[in-house]
Image 1: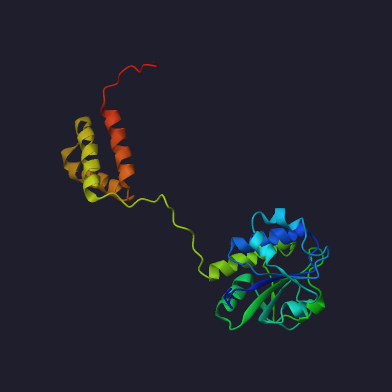
Image 2: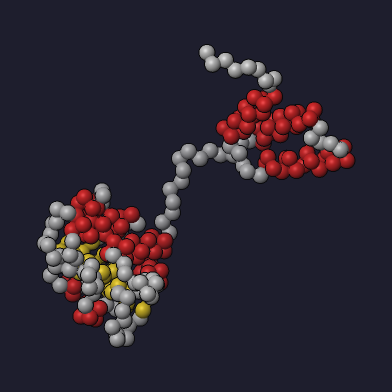
Length: 243
């Protein structure tokens, strides 16, 4: 694991399901190192696996510590996630700002999350170098554990430049000769219908039609489909047999 990739520290988590959901949120965005501080129901927890929905590698490698100080002993940058500053003079950052800092920081970074009901205690926050606060609705600032983890993990992945996978079904644009065939097909069907009338507007109408048909970047299957549509419309209407 890269030194720049943060560890996720869950302090005194209460429910195995929430640990599993946090693991799922982590792996969604490329984080796999979880550390647990005195989980209430012990570890491993049978309820965590089903909630992780496949993020088993995170749970299997999770480390357990007795204290937060032990869990972050090798980390140079510790962010305590809390909605309250608790009267402490520490830098306060958003998940986005923290992610940018961690991307260029020297040494390990840790994102610390408190218990589901009460959040981090003052003593926990005192260990951190910075306070990480999510800008939520001031009248309703309640986030569950997995939600808080996924917000921070998402900002980390964004700062790390993780991109969406390319579509395997994407086809290159059709070559020019296929587009010319499509344009010619349209013109051949529109000409007898007086689409290019009056003659004084004929060239302008042809140019507009060409611009419309060349702008989208059709691939060859799309061009072939349009040609098939045009050919069908050009046929004489015949009664359809249901046999």
